[in-house]
Length: 486
Ligand code: NAD
Image 1 (spheres, rainbow, N blue to C red):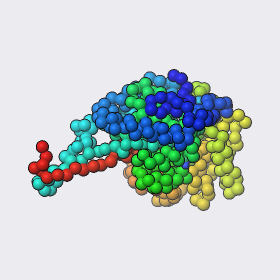
Image 2: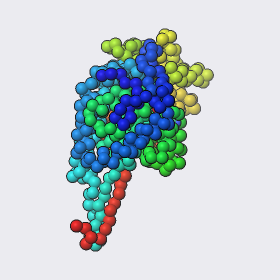
Image 3: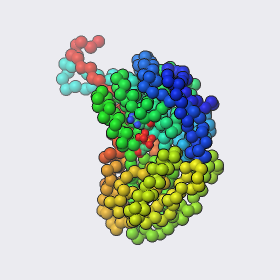
Image 4: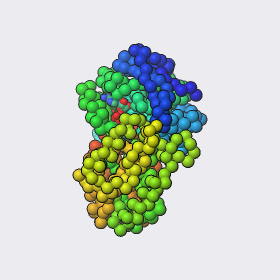
């Protein structure tokens, strides 16, 4: 597999109209991995034109045909698992073991949407399904139609995964897409484009334009032919996307930030709780929208759990993502390291009690250790704001009611984790926390059958499951007098 560095437009690899290029780095050693095309509005326009030309035939090709194509994509990703995982690890900095999980997630997502639409020509979700009416003089049928030209914008923390969660349902529904990957991690998406090309995705149906948010993202959102946008990223940019989309009255799905809580009760298995708390806060170096970076622990076990989590942090194997046994790699970029370090400075200003971590490791590569603060008050910026790095806040509670109130004390509501041996309490707490997905006594596994997305300012809409497909479909009803139907 070649390392691709150009845009993928209308089934071809091509330079930017401007011929400009930008560097892409390996965050583990700061070396330049590639120089990729740096697109602008004219490249976006070319891609949108290709999409507009290709989409009607793709929509007409039928769900069964599209399902076959999605399955070939899943097979193509699976066949290149090792290369794709290594590329993820090199461009994003995540340990190879985590990158492999990402690739497996991409495969299952494409396979899931293939299965879901396979029966769509005939099954319950089919287009042209009859709609029962109370008046026998009339008949109605319901159609699910694609939007047509769709724009997809993704961040750098789970490059191929956030992409698959959009591309698979968008194509399954009969749309054609322009994808804008993050300028920090465009290489995995370009590799995915190669897989899709080899899988026989018709030209123009899937396009990738590489570049910055300002140069490529904004023109894509604003383009008059784009009818639906699906964005994953920060709240600040999500707001801009929504404002710009409002001008053209376009459909918008947003997957934004989080500041999620894990709740550890006094009856928890502390070995299990230590691992779940640790992974929830520090997997992918904490660069997860779903990071459970507010760690709430019952006061009876708070001291012991804290001791264990700090010991785990100090023993963590941090280093080269490609080396076997590495548990945490670098942050994905210098900008992200600087952003996270600013929060360490804020914590010092606020007089927070640091239990471990804080300092950058070395001077080459963007490494930072797990960093924990104790007894963080609700007024602290570290309690309220998404940090998106290996920094977490610990806090104890005295009662179930207090734990739930603390968990819900956030403008975000993406996920939550509940750890207790009491099944009734687990159910009560899971029902009471304001989050789109709650895990009970388990790691953050995501199945394509369950929805992804959150409450409050975390999301508009849901990805995955049938809801992820519906996000890329429009409903049409056709109603007529009974005697006029054939
Ligand atoms: P970001 O918002 O800076 O960038 C996301 C994408 O938007 C990038 O491709 C960027 O180039 C593009 N962009 C920037 N400005 C734009 C503009 N004006 N118009 C259009 N596009 C523009 O986010 P990031 O730093 O790449 O990612 C981190 C954020 O993503 C965090 O807030 C995290 O919580 C969020 N995230 C959310 C989920 C979720 O499912 N809820 C998943 C992953 C990441």
